[in-house]
Length: 384
Ligand SMILES: *Cc1c(COP(=O)(O)O)cnc(C)c1O
Image 1: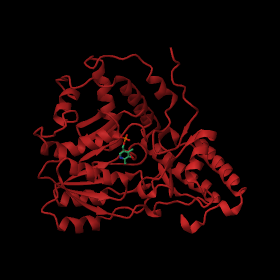
Image 2: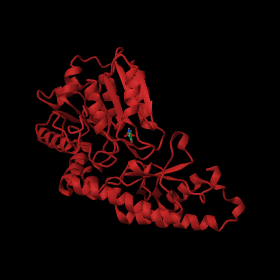
Image 3: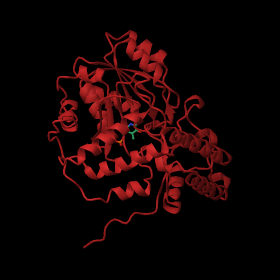
């Protein structure tokens, strides 16, 4: 028999997955129960109640979808899009672009309004774009753009969506559990997330919350996706609890443990912990000539983007050294930011001062080694 996978030592400071606490890890080792076991219903109810608290919503249809964050996106898009649906999508990064592409794939008519990567979306641009549309059925934006480290404030877009009687869809994959989402306050109708970022669980579940307003508009099961159809899913998660799919009970144990930890810590304290982590990170990186990338007015607390410093002539090699020698994972840039920025996640259990200090110490070592090399092999700052 071949031996099982040996996990190398890793400190996860990338764009996800984040670290899991010992209690969350331990919960994964419990034996399963069946998907129609009556003992499951109180567990489900508790998870749904706690998820509503994280989303800041009273939406009845709040459930963990089976799958990663992308099934949250696909479920939202699949249930909201049709051939005559007009969708306005804010794009200021990789994930906004994905939402726009997915709506088009599901046959909707898509109009984009954009902001430069690194800058937040501006509701004035949404207004200009909407002026040329026959109507706006859905407005979609990403709350925390993980590709750029930018926060898009939800409130102005919620108000704008209500003015147009549009359904407001927000991607909260990276923000949920790390900063306020306050879905009901800012008039978000559909919001999805994932468990492996600020919620502190394993990947494999995508919590989603759908307002009654949005549910009532998609009452006919028109979605071509059977697996993520909200009406079918509701029949399992609510009475009569009819079989839909074999829900991943081990992941439920872990999500329940993670949500219990969030409740014990309190959301306010958790948000402050993420803020402090990002502040500490930037203050420790500044002496290493590592400067923030995202615009000052819109930086995320759980995902910090920084410009690759001049001393890192081969940025992929620096990330390789961090991983192989120091056991630390950080992320590289996506799209046209590849090679130009690093993405450092301080999410959930990874938002700890000790881990951030470890990363800064490791980067200091990388910098010292690079300056030991002849200066001819170092890049010109202007080329970066
Ligand atoms: C990570 C992420 C996703 C995708 O989630 P997966 O769990 O990788 O499927 C979607 N949107 C945003 C903003 C993300 O950060």
